[in-house]
Length: 181
Image (tube, rainbow, N blue to C red):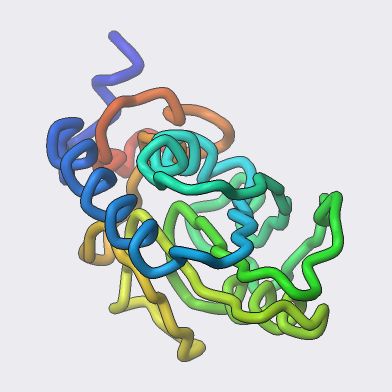
């Protein structure tokens, strides 16, 4: 059995992702023209999306990364947010664009936004590849959305289950047999 056999169906194709990222990059370039932009990627899940999106933002910017976790090796958020890596630079006076792989319950993003806003940037906005609004527990503003998706456990294009499947070039629904014991 191939490891990709655990993917039940493809939700968003590689071609759809590429096209949408180009659109997002163009819009972000327009919206941040003339501003001091720091693009903050949320590790590890957002790294593939972050890399492709950054190449479509046509302006000077600084890269930085944060690492937080609320899933561990589960398919549902634990509710406990662990801060594992902080930014390497001060953000006061900059405009921050948080790049996230998926917005689910909203708890992690709400925590991150409050944490970053307390550091006195000019603004904090959010760009996510996937928005799973059905699962929202905390209201959060997402300024740029790649795709709205249903409440299914997805992997690929940086998203994982227990560290696996990040390298899939599409967004797929993981078969329950891959994570149910």
